[in-house]
Amino acid sequence: MSDVTSNPPFQTVKNYRWTICALVFFATTVNYLDRQVISLLKSVLSVDLKWDDGDYANIEIAFKLAYSIGMLGAGRIIDMLGTKKGYAAATGLWSIAAIAHGFASTTFGFIVARAFLGVTEAGNFPAAIKSTAEWFPKKERAFATGIFNSGTNIGAIIAPLTVPFIAVAWGWQWAFIITGAIGFIWLVLWQLYYTTPGDSKKLSKEEFDYIHSDKEDEALEKAGKNEKVKWITLLGYRQTWAFALGKFLTDPVWWFYLFWLPDFLQSEYHLSLIEIAVPVAVVYLISTIGSVGGGYLPMFLINRNMPAFKARKTAMLVFALFVLPVVFAQYAGEVNMWLAVLVIGIAAAAHQAWSANIFTTVSDMFPKKAIGSVTGIGGMAGGMGGIVLSWAVQKNLFVHYREIGQIEKAYFIMFLICGAAYLLAWLVLHLLAPKMSKLKF
Image (cartoon, rainbow, N blue to C red; front, side):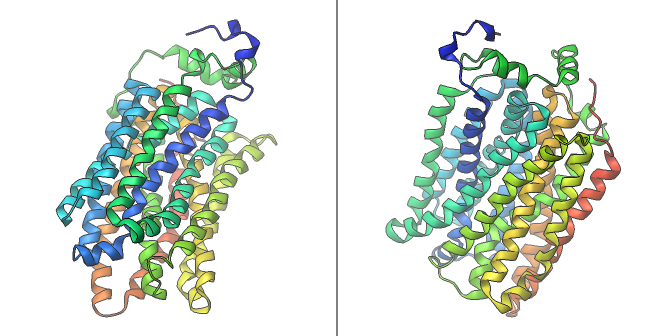
């Protein structure tokens, strides 16, 4: 580790940790831009490749299954390779996978491409959470997580404002190719600017000390820094299950918004491919506010001397309550489509606020050496929850209700599930990890 105190003053950059946060934000933006392209092109691909809702659900399930498996392995690989190498490998591979969609010409080809994308995109969040744990003290992690996690919204905003127009102008193949290629720009920046705090030549001693100001956590890290933590060991802790079950219950809701929101707008309001661009973008624009604000709220409470675990859980309960109105999204839409968009947008914002905090519970409860692995376990659980929901509800109910001309009933069932998921997840978290105690191993 280099001596940060030996760096001459002109080499230091005040608040350099936020440069790292910006890089992680960029990667997360690309990650979600790449995965959302297919939902925006569903109507076009359904005609060209003769898909029905069942085919689309199968393609979605292939992505989620691969993502779930990938999350379990990705977290472990990130812990072994380190953040810089692991993040670079994941981004390079998922960019190739995204581009590969442009060369698929059959339903099976899309299943293969989506599976490749799922297993490689799984590396983003374990690497992002590990980067945040390395570069931020505990009290700032939820805020930093909220900022980089807002990249999921920015990617989802950019997609509807670009993908339909690229598809109309040059064909749907180029929509996949152009968006997929953006990841290689990030790779160059990552190689130029990322390193660990101890090896950084751009970090002042004051900022280094601030990053490592959680004395108790630092002592725990040094005491066992060379020990490997096995998956079976992690599964023996209630904290692991609290995080995993929270992800299992709430991640599928975000998957639903991501993959089915364009179809909801087209089915309910008969919008064209171009016409869905603005309402979809508005939903994710609103959700960006939730992502950043969700990270700010617990930091605000901690700075006013509320214990970190209590601040985190209080914030998460608030966000769970903000999701509830989504149950009435369709009724609001009967008054005006934009009212439905607003209700869904608020629910999506609450999800992002929730997500920023549930990710941060990992670094609250686990030492840094286990963060990638635990995040991977939770990501796998979230993906499996998405698979269960896709198979049990979307694949079966959507096909049935569309065939009998009552697709609105399928969407009502989905919004009901969305509204209840977060309060149930909060209760599970509260019962399994009431004080989110830091593990010592």
